[in-house]
Image (cartoon, rainbow, N blue to C red; front, side):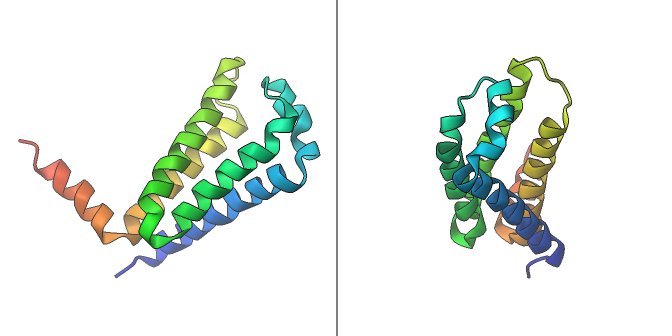
Amino acid sequence: MRSRIGVVLSYAVVILLLADAAVNLFAPYLLAAEMEAVGTPAYLAPIIGGILLICTVLYAIPRTAFLGAILITGFLGGAICTHLRVGEMFTPPQIICLLLGCAAWGGLFLRNYRIRSLMVDSSNSTA
């Protein structure tokens, strides 16, 4: 049985990431100043949005949710590292990325019994 909290958490992650991908794809001019501030050319926004869209769609499909969660984690980790590279520590974008990554895995953990059993069984098998 799937946990309702896990489903709601996963839906929230999907909605937020789809909104971010949509801005990158359809209104990159809104992100131009922020992207230039971290050293990323603004013309790359649609490519970044496309990558995020693919990762999010994979996460939203139950059969590929595990792969999607891995890719989302990598994507968000890259965003955190980008901000660290320019000297930002514990800024709102980094905190949001961290929370989204935790929410993605938390939602997957709560809604997928196979992930839950894999994580719980592997922690009990170490002697």
